[in-house]
Each structure stands twice: as structure tokens, then as C-alpha cells.
Length: 616
Image 1: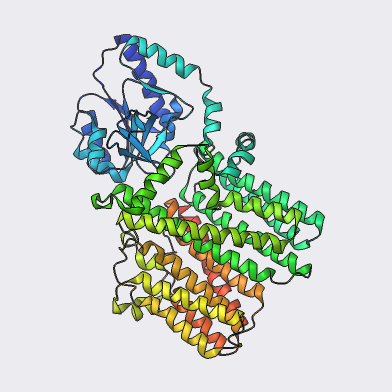
Image 2: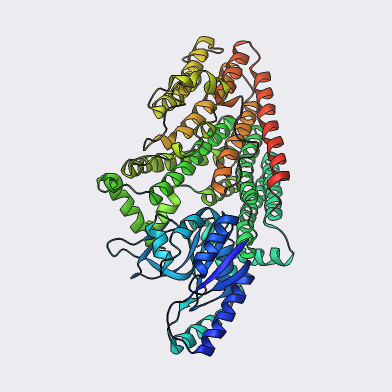
């Protein structure tokens, strides 16, 4: 539940107009979900104390605010349940919007101003109670270290009025905007990727509106998009030219629906942690199903090396996503807790340059920066186009080549920027859980508490990669038992510093390095044991679902539920895989591991949906 407070600005409006405005705001606050609306000199202090005891949210609104009611509704339905403030673009403002976070402006570098309303999440209400006696609580909250999410007005209107003339102009401005049409357009992400912006978002709002009229849920649209992607994969598997053309079109339409589910959630304000989790998991499953379809089709057409390319694509893309997720978390940590000594240096200059480019929306540099990271829209567009005009092998090769370039670009620049931030992030969470440590590391290997966890994880990935390269180059002949055991031992060595503090500026790379080490060892075991490449792909696919599950729950604010730690972990799987390969049953070992990992993921997900995922 949400408690609402109207804060008197001290301005003198005509009493009748002020009473009317108060009535309108009270109705809008109740429509936004407020159970009570209070005003008066001590209202904020009383409401904050009551909300603190009952663990409720507080919606604070200026009594002189003239705005579309939808803006208050948007505040009260923030997807992740984080404190969020209404902001209005203003180059002379005293605030700045940094990657969707509201921060005080420094050195006159303001980009927005406070829009007159803020929704304080239950977790931040104790901080609100501490500053409730201040005349203006919002600056006090920011000064106390609160970093709200920005809710920009965009196409809607919000004005703080101080006299009758301003009130009339503000009302006219609100009346001039078609609120529903603006909300529908605002359901499209404000800053999206090039392909999505021009090839999808130009017409996807019509699909979103139709889905809303049909009363479809965002999760329902996600399910339909999965069907389109599966149909595309099956068409790719057929490998005929008409089937490849159909597959490319189906993949594109599936991506459109992938955008529509998020737009529908923002338009209808039907959010849920598990709905966001489902969207993330479905995105990855659809993309990786398309890889498999392209590889199977190329093999059917007699084209060699397609499955190895699919394996390279899934490993590369998953490792990239792990770096994306943890760099985003690191950036948020740096934004919330900046270090004064982080100023200067190459990383700081790169950050400043990136900010300038991102602010120049629509420029060539802006779009090049968006394209070069090879986001999902560009990936799916490349797969669709190459599948239509060439074949599955060429499509997969294109994805791998572009992915390698994007990873080199992002990893290099982000590492330099991370060094300038001088903050850690992996030590702020359950480190062992996100490392995916099993009982072997937790109870035995991790007791050493060695420093430099990233060095050990990187060495593990390099050892596994070296074994893969040696096997592919013919330097080692299968089964290469001794080499596989040595590589496995080096990989297991990444568990030695598991209990060390992962607070270094580059330790956010540890999860990605561990994923790379495990996946590459799977590839090496497949080469050493002559395992059919589709079986290798199947095991890696199941492992990606497990690892995406961990990250998606963190990003979407979903509860950990039963996925709090796999007893086997990456270390246990490495031991089982190596033992099965040395024993001469690598294929059976991979099939069993795939069934175990996939089955555990499925059982845990279903159990958590039943207990905590009732919202779409």
C-alpha cells in the first residue's frame, strides 16, 4: 500500500483555485493507488512514521503541481519498486539524470529539475522519516545519499504553479496533450538501439494498443514471441530457401513481439519481478534456439563447421552478457557512492566523452556507439538478413565476428572506466551465489582465502581456451586425458580465492571469467571425447539458462527463491564432466549434466512462480 502527502509550497493561489487543485491532486493520488491522502504542517512526519512502522511506501506531491494524473500513477508503479522522482528536462536545473538515476548537479551541469512528486519505496522510508521535518524534504533526501530513479515527464506535462496566470497556462498545457496517446508512445523506450528505433518502434505501438484491447498480459505476449522464435528455428532447420526466408521473417516478428511485451507492461503498468525475469530468460532462450536452428539447417545442407560456430556464438554471447550485467551493477554502485579520488585519468575522460556522445541523441557518433556494442536488435537483424540471403553457417559466422569485435571494444573501454570508478560491486551481494560456487569450493577449496580472485578466474579461462585451441589445431590428439585433467585442475583453482573480498575495481569480471572457464572446458571435453556437437551445445544451453537465472533475478528484483545456490556448482560440474570424459563416457556425462542442470532450473522456476510470481 501507499500513503500520500500533499506538501504546501507556501505560494498564494486563489483559495477556490487552490481547493480545486487539492481536490484534483487527491483524486489523482488515490487513482495512483494511495490508500490515504493527507496534508498539513505535520502530515509528512506523521505519515513517514506510520509508513516506517507498517513498511508502506509514501507518495509525496507538491500541492501546487499541475500534471497529467498518469505521471503520479507511473511513480507509484515503478517496475522494480525503487524510490523514483518526477523530473522535468531543464539545462539550468539543479539535478542531473545519470543513466536513469537522479543526482544533485555539480559545477552547473544540471540536466533536469524536480517535477513536484516523489514516490519513496518502503526500504527508503526510514531515511524519509529522518528528514521529514525539513521544509523541503527532497533535497534533504538527496543530500543524505538517496539516489532515486528518474521518471521523466517526456510527452506529458507537469508544472509547479505559483499564481493564477501560471495555473491557467499549466492547465491549458495539460489539456492540449492526448494523455492516452502520449502514454502509448512513452511505452517505447526513450533511448533504444538503432534497428529497434527505426525498424520496430515506428509501428510496434499499434501492436501494443491492440494487445491491450485484447487484454493480453505482457507475459502472454512473451509466450507468443517464443512461439515465433521456435517457428523460426524450425524453418532454419529445414534449410531450403523459402524456409530460410520464412525463418528470417518469423525471427523479425518475434523480436517485434519481444519489444511489445515490455511496451505493454509500461503502457498498462502491469509489472512484476517474475514477469521481467521471464522476459529476460525468454530472450536468451529464443536467440539460442535460433542459433541451434541455423546450425542444424546448415548441417542438413551439408555445410561443415556450423555447430562449432553455434557453440562459439552461445559461449561468446553469454560471457558478454555477464560482463554487461555486472558492469551495469558497478556503474550503479559508482553513481550511488562516488569516490572523490576517481576523477581524472583515462577512464574518467572516457566516461566524460561517453556522456557527451549519449547526450547528442541522433548524431552519427551516438548511433555508432549504440550499434558497435552489437545489441539484441542488431543481432537479430543480422541473423534474419543473412539467413534470408545466404545460409545458416554464414549467419552464425557473422554473429561470432561481430560479437568478438563488440566484446573487445566494450571490455577494453569498460575496464578503463571501472579502474577510474574505484568501487567494487561483487562484494555488495552474495558473492558465492553469483560466482555459482558449489559445495567443493564452499567447504574445501575456498578455505584458502587467497587474494586476487580475478587473476585466478582469468587463468582458469585461459587454461580452458588453450586446451580448446590445442585440440582444434591438432597439437593434442583425443582423448588428451592428462591435458584435460591438468586444465580441469587449473580451472578448479579459481575456487581458491572464493572467500576473498571481491571488492576490486575489476572484480566485476569474475562471474564472466568463471562462465568462460566452465563453458570452454565443456567444449574441450567434447573435443577430447569426440562428443557430438549438438550434445555439447545442449549442455552449454542448459548452463546458460542456469546462469541467466541468477543474473536476471538480480536485475529484475526477483526473489532468490530456491535458486540460492546450486550444491553442485561450477566446480562440481567440472569434476563430473572431467571424470566422465576420463572414464570414456563423455557423451553420457554431458547428457546427464544437461538433464540435471535443466531439470533443476525448471523445478526451481516453477516452484518460485507458484509462490512468488503471481503478477504478470
